[in-house]
Image 1 (tube, rainbow, N blue to C red):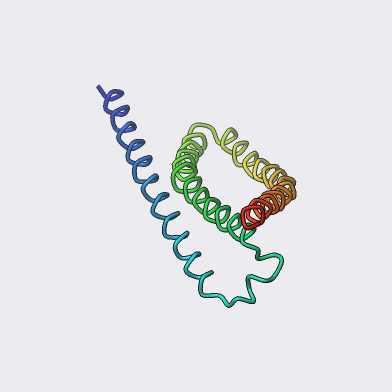
Image 2: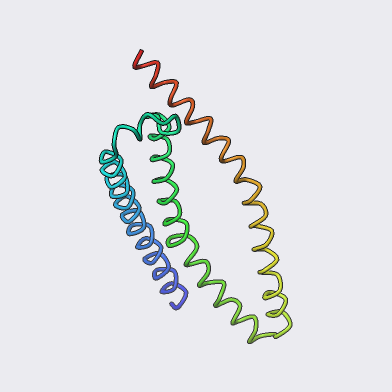
Length: 147
């Protein structure tokens, strides 16, 4: 009966996380998009004549920025926070069961973070190249439409 209650509680918590997380994500992306567009519309005309601020590039940057922040919120609050809490509980249980096993876990975690950080740094250059490609593609499409 305890296992059944545990599974029911887990299902309810999981559903709540997904439901409210999706709701937060939708509202956040909507509000961010509206604020960015309102802010950009308040700029002077000289802002739009700069080559980096052409309409296709701006649209791509706005979309990528909003989706990036939305993904950050989802990744941290919906995916990572429960996993981090579970990892902390597991570490406490490991330390209470066997100190040496817990210490090995404590040593491995910083190594894992270091390796993850190095991989993210390598991918950053690739993402910038892809952003430039998307911006130029969007600008070409918009200039084709305007022509």
